[in-house]
Image (cartoon, rainbow over all chains, first blue to last red; front, side, top):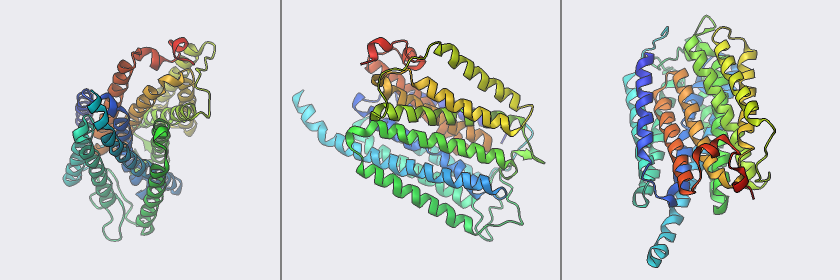
Length: 99
Length: 307
């Protein structure tokens, strides 16, 4: 793929990211941060490619280590977001009732 | 551009679907009703991205990724152990991640997110290191000479990854109480920071002329240092904003590595995370009535934030 095509994808995705979170409710700031964090572990794709690449043994081990780190983040990140959202739902009702 | 790799359309399509799932995840997390569905979309997207990469890149016996994009797998080297190793690595990570997620106190959430960011940053550094040490396998070099464009992307990727790593470690230590939440103000820190940043950029520029290992690793070390220097002057009260900002950095690091590896999943997702993380930190600043610039520049508003 040529550079301009890749750059176009990148720039358009930046704009999507810019517009998509503006309306977030303050109570969801932390869960949103947690889910964004989990999503940023897409770096695992690069780690998998490195781990699967033939040739240099060192770079393969670096890749495997990166796979471990990114998997901690993926599973931990989504699980923690789910936990927070479950809590948010329970807390929501009394707050709404007070208003 | 010197290098154009054949792209498997199915892979590109799968990565596009993963990207859409991530957009829906971010959108979903913006309102309480759709938040759980959003989280589920995130998981689905990540699952698609991982499985697609595994299927196309792992040399599984006869299916040795003949049409893997950008990767020229050496025909004489098919490692059957690789698939097993990768699955074990994912399993180890999953076990650690799920255990932490289950045990962690709800009040410790911000520092946990900071700790997780440091992992992404370190992973980005490792991937960049792997690409630098073994460029042939990533299709970014010819006869051991790495393409100039790839050198820039790699240099920036490793720098942003390293900043994310060390910055997140400091943010974690401050939030967790391992380190005082008070801003640490070094004399002449703005000049020092600008100097280190300029040195990193200069080295990235020099890296395009000479691919000597010392340049690559010096960039890495300087970036670790600047991550540390940028975060220590920021007070504990501003840390949530910093964590969100570091989140944005981790996205840019992933996008830079995506450019290096010509991988659209990493580019789309990295850009999404990078820009939405930046906006989220701006929104958080506004909610706290803090000036975005002064939080990020570090320590300008330290007097009223310290405590």
